[in-house]
Length: 120
Image (cartoon, rainbow, N blue to C red; front, side):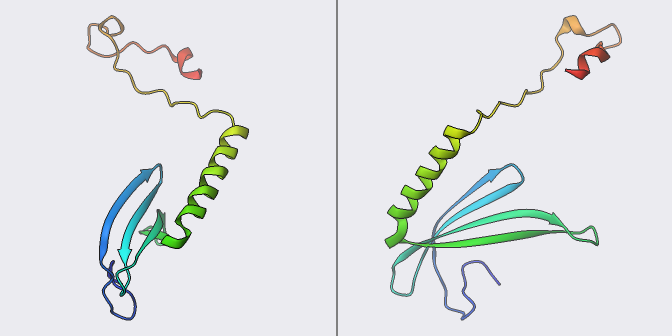
């Protein structure tokens, strides 16, 4: 099914779209209009999966959120996120790769590696 079209063939105009990449998932926030020019939001979670044959496919889950529910949804989501943050340990930032300094390089142009440092 082509994005932006419903099964009945009526065009659902996409007004605004925002993709958010988060690790192995991508979230799509799409604002669409109904036949009566009313707006709603679809939130789609997309994950890349591999089938038994080794080929990949995208597993998608979609949520439809109508404007009369926006405030209650946002309040609930904000409350739940705040609660999770209050009971969870802080997320540690991942150490980023740092290129070896000139003092770590030997005459061959390669970095000196101390294998004891790899256990840290």
